[in-house]
Image 1 (cartoon, one colour):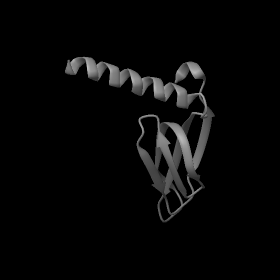
Image 2 (cartoon, one colour):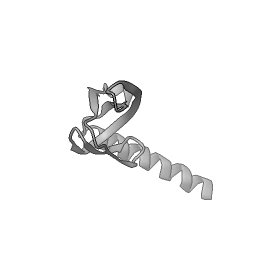
Image 3 (cartoon, rainbow, N blue to C red):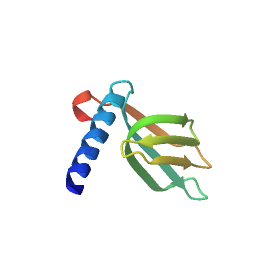
Image 4 (cartoon, rainbow, N blue to C red):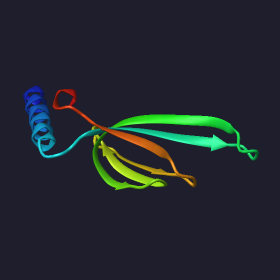
Length: 93
């Protein structure tokens, strides 16, 4: 009986996410943050990518958003981050 409730619960969760996806614009977010040394030479380039469900705040130095998994991510940097967003197709969701 417990297995049945787990199956029904997961189905309801997937159905709810599908209904929500019809009203949201999902995006891929690619953030590039370049670190420089004291002479101005590039030391390290960090590239991170996420599938974003919703943006709460999106500025050059501070980003806060919700991923497709439902976790809230907050990025802060002292120097501006370069970022690129791409709209996801409905087939990718």
